[in-house]
Amino acid sequence: MSLKLLYGFHAVGARLRAASDSVRELLVDTSRHDARMQQFLARAQDAGLAVIAADGARLDALAGTHRHQGVVARVEPLDKMSTLDAVLDATADTPLLLGLDGVTDPHNLGAILRTADCAGVHAVFAPKDRAVGLTPTVAKVASGAADTVQYIMVTNMARTLAALRERGLWVVGTAGEATDTLFDAKLAEPTALVLGAEGSGMRRLVREGCDQLVHIPMQGSVDSLNVSVAAGVCLFEAVRQRCCLAAASGKL
Image (cartoon, rainbow, N blue to C red):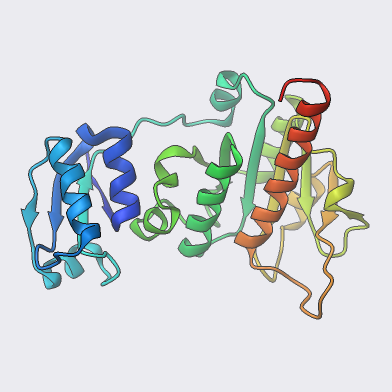
């Protein structure tokens, strides 16, 4: 089994909490003596992990960046579901999925996964040919959410949306020129939200595969949002609607 690399306090710390037995090597810069490092080392000791001392240059080379905060780990990949059908079959709650068409920046994906975890998204999906994978940079920015959120890469986005509609999900895409606003969408029902890349947006066939197109109302002079921010706005509108429905039905 090939090992993957994690770095940074958030990403490695989240793996220690979730599955410390999957950590095969833990390297730290022992020249750091601050409180944060001491807390991290105590957590590693509690998990029964041996720490390998390494200098900054070695950690830079392993991580491919100097933004590792003095913590790098080699870990086994966690078992995850490989298809959206498997995710939906295992979901007892009202499904909430997030599709990303053309998001290739690892910082954006990491931020989106972190938000998706907070919003209770059941899976994030993206096309294999126009998306970034789960790189160490994604894992660091995601602050542990790369391990907790199902991230599924699909062969064809348009066919995937058609399959989700057949399973009863309402597919809502975001487009600046859409007539409906985000607040017009009924997101408390089984939903797949779809966002496109900044600038180009969703591809034509993906756009045509949506049941409804919506835009986020903009009040200022700037006419667009970073895709990770837009994802947060859309997902927490879905959370708001679902909480309101639960409260009205006495389930909250």
